[in-house]
Image (cartoon, rainbow, N blue to C red; front, side, top):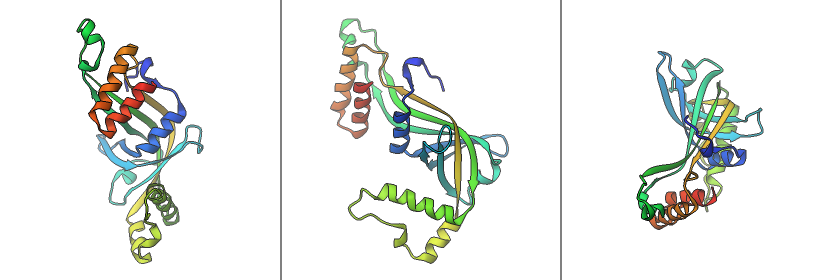
Amino acid sequence: MYLPRHFEQADAQAIAALMKEHPLATLVSTAADGSLNADHVPLVYDAGDGPQGTLRGHVARANPLWRTLAAGGPVLAVFHGPQAYISPSNYASKQEHGKVVPTWNYAVVHAHGKLQPVDDAAWLRAFVERLTLRHESAREQPWAVSDAPADFLEQMVKAIVGIEIEVTRLEGKWKVSQNRGEADRAGVTAGLLAEGTDEAAAMARLVAGG
């Protein structure tokens, strides 16, 4: 990833927070024939498990990823945070000299690591319960794994395989107008908030805080 220093995110807590808030990762690996493959998998990041942390998730048993990728094979998990088009009309400097162009702001995390498949029913059941609790707990009437019939759950668990990714390197890129002056950043923040969308508001917070 091209990573100019002024866009580099070195805050480990900010990186972990983005992965938690945007858990659906694009998991890039090399297929058996040498071609690149991309799967889209919700992953849970455990920062304290290993020197750089560990990612965990599961894929369909029919997915060739866990069979064709040798144990310990390299993968890249890309987590996509807020993103937004930035109009030059929002820059104060447009009125001063007009030398402005559109751009795109975004925040992403690249997690490099080594994948290990986990074909263990007990591990999978515990992980699915943990994942479900994380995403259901804020609901007024949260669904629990135990709500489904036991024999159905057994069939579902047999249809998936766990994956663990030992993270070897984390890269964070926050391209949030750090290269613009204060007045331009204020204009970008106001323009994003005026759009009235959750995504634009999330980017506005990054621009204002960056």
